[in-house]
Length: 293
Image 1 (tube, rainbow, N blue to C red):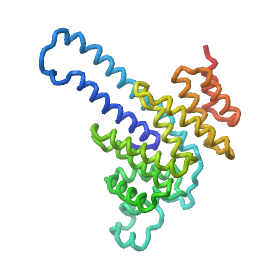
Image 2 (image 1 turned 120 degrees about the vertical axis):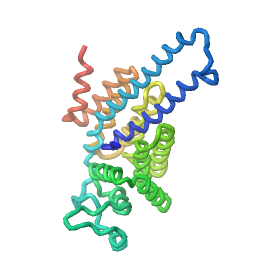
Image 3 (image 1 turned 90 degrees about the vertical axis):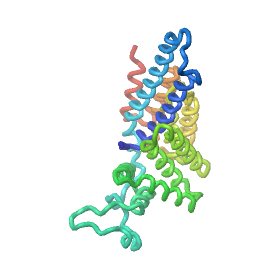
Image 4 (image 1 turned 45 degrees about the vertical axis):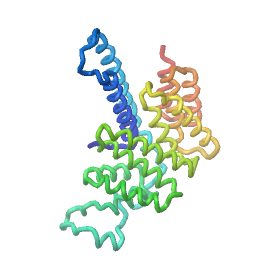
């Protein structure tokens, strides 16, 4: 199971949920008479398969697009690790509960240590990504998700915890069977919504939600919702001091406009981003591509 980045996870949740819908669509088309011969059935089969293949191809393109955005969230630089490690020092209780490691060997990962690092406000994006990878490799995903849910229940008014719970649910998407992917994706989206209810200006909650929406296949109709989220994010950014990661909102908003056929609005969004972040290579590249015949 691979889950190297938060952005890849986000798209996997969207693609997984959509794939489940596609499977249902394909089966529903046959109905209760699937085993009975129907006049002209072979003529109907090809268009159905063609539509299904086209939608699956759309999912694959969405996955590829979001993988290109892996470096975007990592480039935020908003969080800085102060200890350089992958886990906080364990408490006396945690140390006593953890099995002793052989000399020279890395101590086994515990649910407590994983949760402490994932919920540490000083942990960098890269460190949290590395910890999720360790959690998955150790087979502790369900336990960590349950522990994180319990922590959210104890601190229901903490938006940061709800964002990380959403990330935890997205990790479950990778481990789930096809019939369960949609369930975990919806739980993740609800967690981000809950964080935004507590703090409507929570940048990461709105950005990750918007990125996920932007990468749902077009036939699911999430593009307008993604555009609205990015527009709101930009309005909130403009109301406060400029941050290094704010350029991402302009890039994605322009990309969404371009994907929906609003070329002039796309260029306008990229130009606004370029004016604020003139050294940003990604936005400059989009503008250069937009000028090509």
